Length: 504
Ligand code: ADP
Image (cartoon, rainbow, N blue to C red; front, top):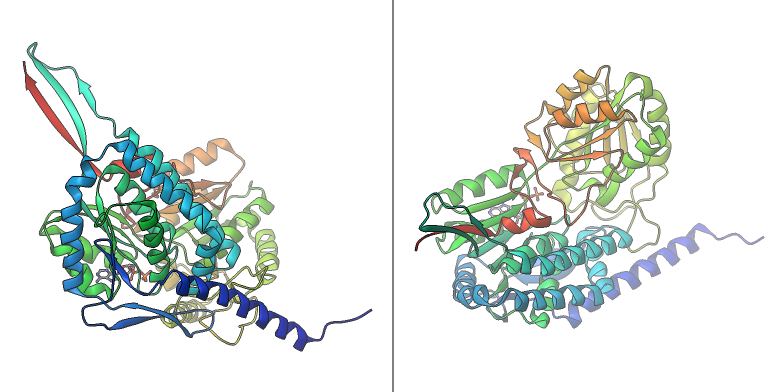
């Protein structure tokens, strides 16, 4: 029997990573992803300055995009404002046809897009491919939805009157997107906005601008007229101020942290913009005594570790009822410590890096705090030795006073809390200021409905660790934001009703 020496495995892994990175770098080179897209023109910053893009799995520079500021953001607003009358008056079926071409191009190029996501964001390649499939689903849904901006007629209160309600696009939309789903978040905002007849200016996260530029390349090929779809890259501050301060921008669609969301909301107040805000979560993952433990462990693995724990719907607080505590912990620890962690281009990797050094520092602070408060720590896979990784970690018997009870970890770190009664866990789940997603495992239909009714979140996963569906209304309550993305709810966000009152 022959055995493979560890050095040979390391060499072959390095070769696989090199090939994967080369594929992604070819996309950057062949698609020329180094300029922003304003008014149908690929442009440098006025200053010619650039912002480096880093591979979080290696920590090296993989590209650079224009470092734009206020003046370029204003030029994008000029373009989107000028393009709005033509785009909004186009027939809905004409807009739908362009959206369908965009959807088809996303599908044709799904492997290139997935490589790019793995390179700039770090998630394992198969998860990146699933992200692209999600983006395609949104483009498809809203291409179809474009034709369904139905209005209404309603009975008048006088015989010689008629009442008609029409739907009109909101106008120029600013879309500020995060780095955790660098392609899907762009499509989830732009597809409904464009379908409704709005024009869009995207400001992608500075950590992951390349996927947004790739989406713009395909949008250009799909045939969106100049100025309808713009991408401005650079530092958030000046661009955000220009977008939120200009009265011609009629709506802000933002996904990101609650702190930045509040700040942008304030900035939008002066010009009374419409807002769609998808902000932080702090999801409770509740397992009742009567739950199917294997299903609950499988759900917690997906909910906690997908995208290295960097999703706003991640299980951030796992609550186990007394009767299942030990059995769940045993199985969950076995499953989570067996996970593989490493470069996303290596086949079979389950956990990739965190996005940047600050993210690693934040989770280290929260873990240290929980440890001091009395939590027990059980670590999984070793660190790969380069890049922005943090080890998968289970923390048991975490006291409620630990900072991670109120703050999102955004890392592959799972804090576990114990509870005794149904009422206890409802109170604990709702004790925080955010309310995006929650998860509930039980086999008692009455208990499920009773608890789900009382959970203060916009989404509830019942006996399921994933909740993603392009047709469903995704969004939060409390400080997790306002508005919904997905389905006709996500379409309505970009439409204003106009009530016409006729005297005959
Ligand atoms: P996270 O903490 O997950 O990185 P952020 O809320 O900081 O989330 O970032 C989400 C998006 O908001 C990114 O595109 C980022 O560039 C942008 N952003 C952050 N601060 C501002 C700001 N002051 N003005 C406009 N956009 C901002």
